[in-house]
Image (tube, rainbow, N blue to C red):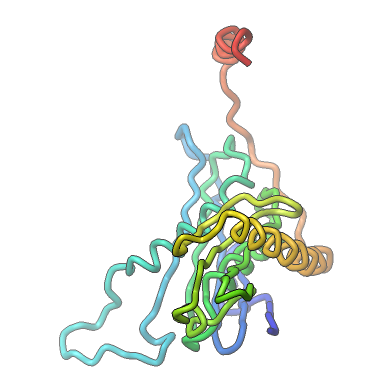
Length: 243
């Protein structure tokens, strides 16, 4: 399958934006970093996954409803899937706001936008000046009967012979996040699925690295929040006999 990436002129005020497409499913990912550190004790990252009725050619026709509703359960879970893959690769001592917004512009009912969204989010972060230790990639793998399928279509996932489906993500040569749903799937089969996914992830990361080499921007170096020396010494003292 052909997977297309282009830098987007749709969201020029964002720090970085990317349009990604597979089949007729099109996803826009924008990333923005704030200009000032916040006085908080955690790294403020938010990932929003925006489904739109117009993406599937459906427009609500009521006289009164003129707004999109709250996010669906699937949209929330898809946003978390992207979040869990990218979040560990930030330095959590940062105190700058970072916002990743995934907007589904078109969906063809066959190609899953989750795969497109995660890879586009990785590229958008990697080519931006936002400090991030990516790229990261992810693929869906399904076992249907005795056959393993990489990035199965939505109709294939409804096959009655589906044994399991899994979404696997991570940086090069590593797996950092797994989602799996199956019906009494064998451990050996799941492991084989992960190994196949890891090979595809490395191919996709090589593709991303070729883009970063051409248009990647120099990373900024925001101030990092360090714990106090007193806290560090107390933690070391407490853990020295345990670790």
